[in-house]
Length: 398
Image (cartoon, rainbow, N blue to C red):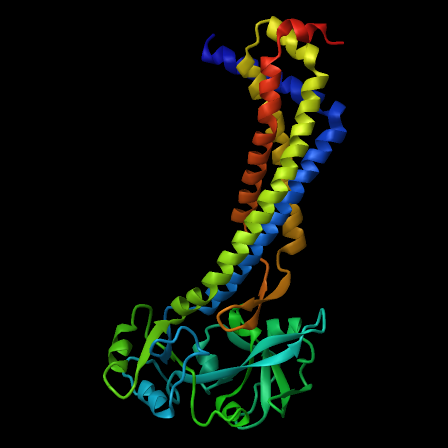
C-alpha cells in the first residue's frame, strides 16, 4: 500500500467518524467539558504565577540600583547607617536631579491591615521613602488625592493595596505603630510591586518606630543599564562600610523566584491529577464510539482498510474532542481570571503582594497542547482495540 493510499484511507475513516459524533453527543460533551475544566485550572494556576512574575518584572529596572548591607538577601535583613547613606549619595555615577543626586534612602515595616474580602489581618509593607522616590520609579503617579507632606503623619497607598485591603481610602485615618496616619492619596506605578505598599516620609517612619537614623536600603538612579560597575567600586572604597549593590531587576527576580516555582509546581500537579479524570472521560467516550461502530469498522477492514487507518481515525476523533476542550478551557480561564486582582504572601519579606492574574496567549496555547495530549492518551487504547478486533467477530455483531 502506498503512502498516498494510506492517507486516503485515514481521511475517509476519520471523516466518517466525525459525521457520527452527533450520535454520541452526550458522551462527547462529557469528554469536552472534562478536558476543558482541566485546562481552565491549569491556565488559571499558571496565570497566577505569570501575573506575580509580571508584577515583579514591572518593578525592576536595569538603570536603578538597590544598595543593601553586604550579605543581605532582602531589605528586612539589611541595615544602613546615616553615614553609609551619605557615602552612597557622594558616588559620582548617580544621575543628578534638580535637587541633587537621584537617591532615595528607604526603610519599611510590616503592618496589619484587614483584607477587604475576608476581614482577616494581612501583612502589608509600610515603606518610608526619600523625596526622590517618585522620580526613581519610572511609572509613578498619583491617581487620587495628593502626595503626603514631608514631616507629617500622612501616607499614600498603592492602587493594588487600596483595592485588596480595607480602610485605606483617601481621607481615612489608620493606626500603625500606635500612631494615627492620614491617607492623602492613591498612587500607581505601572502595575509594579510598589502598588502593594503604603508610603510615607522615611524620617517620620523612623521616629514612629524608633529606628533612629537607620535605613534598610538606598535606591539610586544610574545613567543607564550596565552602568553599575562604577557605583560598586565606589561602595568598596571605604572600609568603614560593608555594602553591596544590585540592579532593581536582578533583586526583584531573586525575591520572586521561590513563589513562582511553588505556584507553578502546585498548578501543574493539580492539573495532572485532574487530567487523569479527563483521560478516563475520553476513554469512555472513545470506547463507546468503537463499540457502537463495531460492524462498520469490521466492514471497512474487510474492504481492505488497514489497521493503522482505523487507529489514526480514532485518535483523530479523540484529539478533536481534546482540541474543543482545550479551546473551551482557555477561553473560560481568560474571561474568568485575566485581570483578576489578588494578593499572596511573599516568602522573602513575609508581606502581602497584590497582583493581577495574567492569561497570556502562550498560556492558552500551552493549555490547548495539554488538552490535545489528554485526547491522544484517551484515544490510544480504544483505537488499538478497534484495530485488533477480528473481522469475522465484528461482522457478527448486531
